[in-house]
Image (cartoon, rainbow over all chains, first blue to last red; front, side):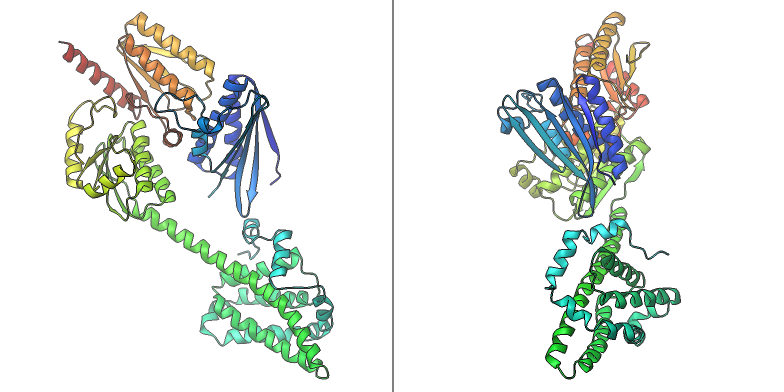
Length: 134
Length: 318
Length: 124
């Protein structure tokens, strides 16, 4: 399978829907099943929304990947926004208390198999996530 | 029936260029081995049929190899591939094509039900036959003969490594299929009466099984239009915090679909230790046993309104 | 893309499509609030059976719709969350605690009618 990348620019809230639809298509091609398709689309919705809310614009890059005998999807969500001052705080769950900073990042991490986040103040944020077929 | 390995098989067996190089390192294959093998190339090529026969005649004596020996089509194909194998063994090119050939043979052995221990005996018979002839050729220089045979043996072990990996992979695949089948059997969702489902959970609940359970339950809720699910965990092997969290997630998902879940069979001890581990059990309705759970379910179904948790106080006792 | 909102007696029924963006959701929220006030509706059915992804924003919006409707005297029920969506929501940590949920439109209406009757009796 060729490793093509799909770049989805995140500029307006309609792009969040586009990003998760593209993600669903790609995941289906890779061979993910029903609930995993929704899980992946939901994770992308959260990180894409994060870009919109905190950086106004950015992009989501989707690609199919392989490791050993496993196939999966790689999602990179990047922006050149203000960056996240306290990543540890951002990754803490705030949903139930209502004190959430609005970041769906801890949620996205729970949904995906692998999750890395790199952020620099004034430079931007890059989130890398992977999910593997079973 | 094709004996061609599937691309996914080849990947699983790790035949990237890196992996192939590592396999050579494992058998300590060195540059000096190539010219040594070249000196016995003609010997092997000349008597290739006799060496192939050594392998299959050995198997023919064993009941355990009848899956291969008695299957004419498989046997013919195996003999053809073995012939190719022996020729390639002394050619000196041990790259991806060579490896794929071995894998193809391994896949065939797997289909014929050839066990590793049986295969190894036959392979040894083959190598011994070649070894005898090599020593005869080097009668004047036995040390050199020994070294030469050792070089060939490295390739032999390279081959064994691949064949055994294929047979193991086939075995694992069968086991996975069987495990999946067992999982299916042990998580039936039963419709007791209208609007009421029972999910008796038995055995070990790992993440994969929990995922399947949740899936099955939610689809049953939809298919049966269930309003109440009684989830009985009496038969669950070990309810630790991980299992408990799986259960909580299943309960939460069912609630989103309008179904309330009553968990039964959670002993007071287990419940206490879960609470001590920080698991929040307040969001679930629990009853001591299945009977109690069913009674509670029927009581709830008698009411017209069943509120989602949080909108009305939870009832039931731990 | 506006979400169609139907009036059925004392109920409002809205069926959400699968590709609503944030703007659409906010528009839906405002429209339901307006209509509940105008028609003095007692109940709102939000049908999400063809919604394929429920993320944190969508979930918050549903909650806001329910809260606003309640302030104006209407109870809201969310119907039709699909199994895959429910699983993803739970893993994401999204709950609809305190909100009415039902399997489908019929169940949802039954729930609403009963809850309205209940509150009517309670008020007497």
